[in-house]
Image (spheres, rainbow, N blue to C red):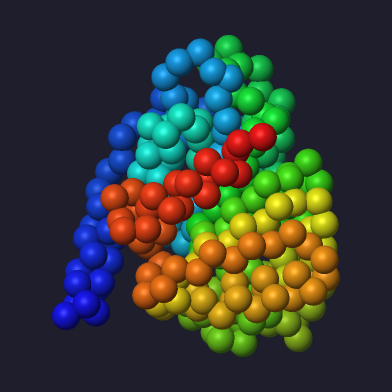
Amino acid sequence: MLRRRSILLCVQSVDRIEQKPPQPDLRFPYGQDPNQFVDVRIPAGKGPHPIVFFIHGGYWRAKYDLTYAGHLCHALKQAGIATWNIEYRRVGNPGGGWPGTFEDVRSAYRALREHKNDSIARLDLKRLCVAGHSAGGHLALCLAAFDHSVTHVLSLAGVLDLRRAWDLRLSNDAAAAFLGGSPADVPGHYREASPAERSIPQAAQKLIHGTADRDVPYEISESYAAKKKKGGEHVELITLQNIGHFEIVSPGSSVWKQVENTFISLTRR
């Protein structure tokens, strides 16, 4: 009976995020490509507001976009946190894959740190958290590995070890499609792009992952956390028992309040 109820709650969570989210307060481009834009949501009040730079998932593929992440970003807005929800070129888009996808993430991040629009001036970049879900979790930690101005980062069911993703043939070899081949074909891409193989000494890293995740196995975050802790990095793994891939990004799910509180803790200085 409990398992059936858990499955029902999971289905309801997925149904919610498949619906159209509330509109962002602002959408603007950070590049020339149609996929290079940001949806911004800003809480009421004068601010300055803490800010989450959010990267959606979808195994880096073009058929998945930022729409579903709008629900999470709207919920954070209601909790007093501004959000910078980015779109980027993905596998299937011209220029998508490695390194083009990651170059877009870096460009969107620079746009946040340099933007002068009056409506954005109420953001407090000293209370900035970089976060992502699934493949977006990978890109969030990858950004932290390349840019040491990232000091607080959150992975929600992230694909943090690309060699392991290849070994498990996750999502029909999505890692190979993203990186341009297997570890034997493009070993340098795996070394460059996989957070599991890069040092992130400056950032407080939090990982949230459900043990019932069928899209990105829990073992990826578990082994990542163990490895990085041995290397002296600041990593905390938050384990959600019997929780799948989408409940953690679904406001109204049984675990959303815990996820929201983690965002709040990472944007509090």
